[in-house]
Image 1 (tube, rainbow, N blue to C red):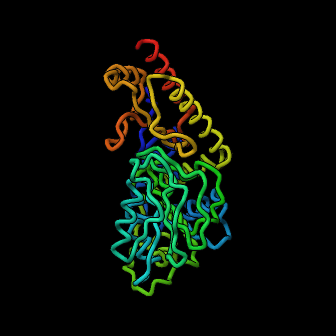
Image 2: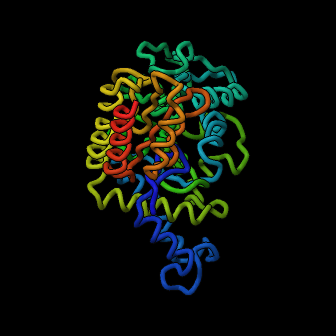
Image 3: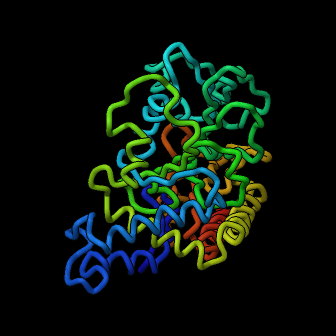
Length: 356
């Protein structure tokens, strides 16, 4: 029986995507070959990469606006280094908004290349809010943001307006809502939270911001080389790219980002309403900073943990345990999660209240 998978990642994907990807592993495009063994230079896979890159730009509304989409190895974590390698010149500085573990990790890598200023930080409160007042130097090479914080359950709802290039890690909320994506100059996302399996990262970059650092960049870390190679400078992670393409097709066929956002907000509203109503639970984030993707909450009486854990596990729920740095529980409600799964969790919470 299929579980209600609230895991933060690797995470839930649409059932039809699992089925199509599994079929391709056995026989890709009726070729008699598995997707895992075909040449990445074959006509069939070149078509996959071309469609995936084009569809990413289409979903974000960035076609013909000077952007390139790439599917690269190394996940979002390698991007922490690729960003300053490609954007931060010698004796220059970059600005980072510190809103969680991954933002801290990104800033740490950037310090290897130049000065890093922290525009604002919510570290003082264990990252349970998004700073609203930020200080960004006008001569900084770029501002780095993390749109959604998977561990701490916060999400930027209103993005800062600045005059320098804006880089954004959208690993855990890519393709989940409508935004004016042209306000970002560099978007990146590890696939495994809301787009595909682990093993690939999506990078969407405005070409005009590249090639200005004055440094020679190692080939595998040079975005301009990956653009010139049409995202196949070296052998790409074919299965992860193909599965991400299937997910993007599913998003498009189900109403695009507008429809995805509507579904996601309905799921989040359902769960947060129960967290706020039920005296046995408490949200770790308040107000507008709550994440639509990852709801984090704790028990008001930790002595009841064993009983609550037994209930949700009996209801075929998986992946609800919170990150060790926050504790409690985390319900990740990515695009592919159906509202019925959220309702199952809410029903368990109601039953828990009755039994307490």
